[in-house]
Amino acid sequence: MRRYPAFDPPEYVSWQADPALTREFHTAVFRDPRRARAIRKLGQRGHLNLYRGLLRFRLCDIGLARWVRQGIISKAWLGAGEEAVTVGAVHALDRRGADGDIVGPMIRNNGANLEMGVPAVEAFRVYLATSDSVMRGRDLHLGDLRHGVCPPISMVSSLAAVMNGFALAFKMREEPRVALTWVGDGASKHGEAQEAFAFAAALSLPVVFIIQANRVALGTPLYGSHLRGDYSGIGTAHGMSVQEVDGNNVLEVCGAVAVAAAEARHGGGPQLIIAQTFRMGGHATHDVREARATFPPELFAEWGKRDPVGLFEEYLCQNGETRETLEDIEQEVTQEMEQAAEEALRSRDNAPGSGEVMHDVYAAHGPVAE
Ligand SMILES: Cc1ncc(C[n+]2csc(CCOP(=O)(O)OP(=O)(O)O)c2C)c(N)n1
Ligand SMILES: [Mg+2]
Picture 1 (cartoon, protein in one colour):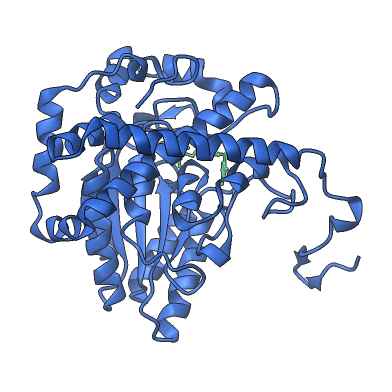
Picture 2: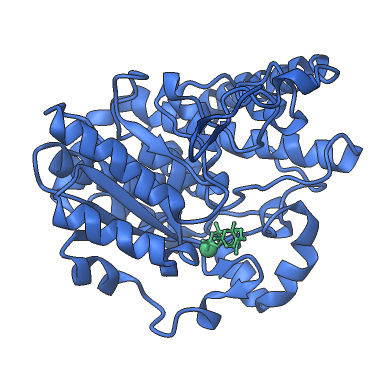
């Protein structure tokens, strides 16, 4: 894809395919027969849709970063380098909408909205806090249950328990549906995440948890919060099935989630996936410099070579796709995102009125009087 020197991490601007990593990508896809079967089932259309999804997430983020640079918004939480963990997972689910599987993204999984069918304009409008945004100007955490997306909860790890609620309802109603959520490696240490894992396991709920191990939590590197360095023990301690994946390999993620979702859907209980990845940017756009100073440059260089978009492009081209096909998709997605940003800007003056502030707000004792 085209690179954007003003917004991309420098490692992406000068991105070149590394033959060893391209080989590794290919090997990983077919290592596990169950995952390989799910990946083959995607067919050409499914593969290109995954590519489209990666580009949507990346280009939506670039659109938001551009808005920050232009002073339209003050900051944005982006997923650069981690897009495959979100896109691969969502594409393995039943995305029919309100009656299908339900996902609970965190803010770094914003691309889940786009892949579940939430219009791209919403990803921009939500940042402008306009009354015509799906969140009605209340919150920049985006979700829409009509498309099977539960909005993120700002307090990290709280969403894991909420997703258990969806899963419990599916189980009680005997509906073959699953709930899926992502838990940051930092958030996985919170009591609420651990309680959610224990509860899901004890009740054998149809839920998939993905620990998004990007080696950092805000400004704290992994080794500052987690002595072991790996997460496999968390799942087995609670009695969950565990799979580990390269989170920058969109096909491996998709295959692993397809296997996990099938298990959960057919009574196999909660499934944990540990996706190894790396945050190529800051916690948000405001602290990129500090984030880059937190880790040695070699780590950025190493993970920079593993750009999920570049790796997948190489794979696709080695498996029969032409550069022209990929460029056409890129042009289409670029246009989609530019139009979405423009459309959102047209709502910029629709601030929520003061009369709306109490709508849909509940206190412990019931609806708040207007
Ligand atoms: C309960 C709670 N404590 C602190 C915060 C502030 N905060 C927001 S994101 C974040 C770090 C989360 O790290 P991780 O779970 O690894 O997710 P990542 O940002 O790496 O995707 C923190 C501490 C919060 N939102 N919620
Ligand atoms: Mg993290």
